[in-house]
Length: 443
Image (cartoon, rainbow, N blue to C red):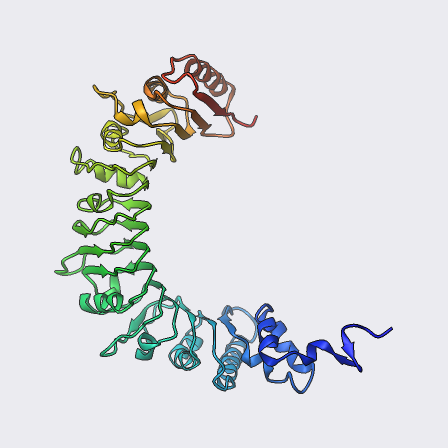
């Protein structure tokens, strides 16, 4: 009986069109793809036309024949790109961590752009400043662009990125405020942008005005004040759905409120002008540093009418003095998550905690709050006091879950844990349907 995979001795796979074979190659590793060249004369150069290319030099200086390997890698990339023959590239990753290979990124980027690339990733972790061609910012086929490294973006007279939807920039050099603003405003369909900034990028006022943007992440934790720069953030993104910021530098925010904003994650110590701009958010996470920053503007907090889910970090210095204000500003809150716990151990047996019940019970406790999660619970009397308050006044609470802090405790700590559990379990509850769950230690 004849093998169904062959006809007159010829493999069915050999009869497939080149385009389908290249698609199959895209699921193989580079080494496996190159290995196909020995299968037949037809396949000798076919592998150079695969739609996805991944180039990465992962050599270390202590490996044998280091320079030979680097030179072979450079020759390999040059040969593949030279034999594309105009065949379009869907995805390309150029990751270079050696100085010799990184020196070729400019020419390789030009070659990839000429192949109408749709998704392009460029990485280099060298401290040396690199150059990228101006044609990168006039590539009409680009949908995804990710750049990581100290690259100078050479800005052409006219930036043209009509199809770009995803832009991730890490450590790049813009030169000045106007260049950054020009880049962002020249992406008419941009939906997702991640900006990781460093002190050398040459920007003081960061202006992001992108009406189409849906997701925005800004990481400025590596910035430091230099010279006479005026540091300011201007964000005009009326269709934004997700916003994340990690900032310890900027103190002046101008943020246009987005009615479509669903989720925001805020880290850092500079919140003035930011909270008003994200007051439409539904899910909000505040880090411990962000909580500390709130003390600089409290009690002037906006009202988060749409907020239903809130995650709070720990303020190391003040504790929970602001919790009543935060709850009062969240009238429709349904889920409250103390993601870092209620107290943070300073030294063995000492803790930082501050909590005074408010004169007026926050509206969310009386009408809407249904779920509370407390992580890293230590079982101190102050923690128990806050937990009892929440149990007593949350009238529609359905579930409170408490996760203990440590998996290894001595007998004295275990005894305290048991007493604390009993004490809290017996405390009055404002909701007759509330379930209290302790995730016990493993011992």
